[in-house]
Amino acid sequence: MADEGKSKIMKFGAVLFIILMIGSLFVASVALLVNNNPDNPNATNVTNVSSNTTVTVPMSEIPGKDVNFTYSNLKDGVKHLPSGASQVAILNEGNLNSSSLPGANVTKMMVAYYPLGIVSYYSMESKENVSIVVLGNNSSGYQYDVYNNYTMIIANSVPQIVTPGNPILLTSYNVDLAERALDAVDGKNISTEYDFLLSNADNVTDFEFAAALKAPEGSGYEQSYQRTSNFSNGTYQLELMFLNANSSLKQDVNNRALNGSANGVTYKVNDNNSVFKIYVESSNKVSFESEMNNLLTITDKYLESAN
Image (cartoon, rainbow, N blue to C red):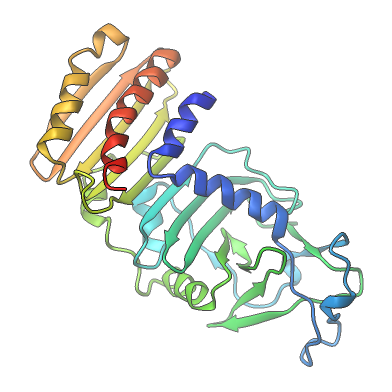
């Protein structure tokens, strides 16, 4: 997808921005907090560790139970998230490898935003031979806590909590949030707030980006969902849904759809009252991205009007 197209998606709920921010934070700061820990004889006082020194820790050497689940789309993904997410998104484009995860082939990221912070998952082809690069030196250990047999590693530079597995769990530096995320991994108190909207989404596993969000009061709708796909037959598709959209938003979208063929795309609009669903398709990438940008510009104004 072109940079212009991605910038438009970032504006749409800022969910892709959060994903990219999470990725950069992981690269910069999956650093294990080392200090005087009576339970860890190899621990080093943090004041004695240079912030410019790193050590690689094999994930297989980190004790405890691993996070272990798979998800094919957002419908699956939210089943592994704690309740209360205001935004959730999946980036499924591949080539997401990080120098902070030697040996990992990261293929997919899921991120959710909460009042307490951010929960994200990094899915890999395999967790075998994967390591984590941390701040420290060859004699340093790392500080961790255990919750329901999961190991929560405390990150230091930009405080975060990391739990090994496939996917790797990364949360903001908030123990309550990390524990809630691990409860969700075990199927407890999972997110259900998007269930109705996502039940109306296509069960597509071939996609680049998918996101759902709760709109602020006064936005013209309650929730939204977006998926972009580049199918193997050469078709580009945007699936866009709004829960309880107002008549003004519906009219703006319908007006845009009237010019679809002239702009090199095909629109399909379905309105079943509570769920307003739009498809935009084209075999021409430039036409598709241009029309997607124009459509999201229209729908974005309803988010902006609530701010």
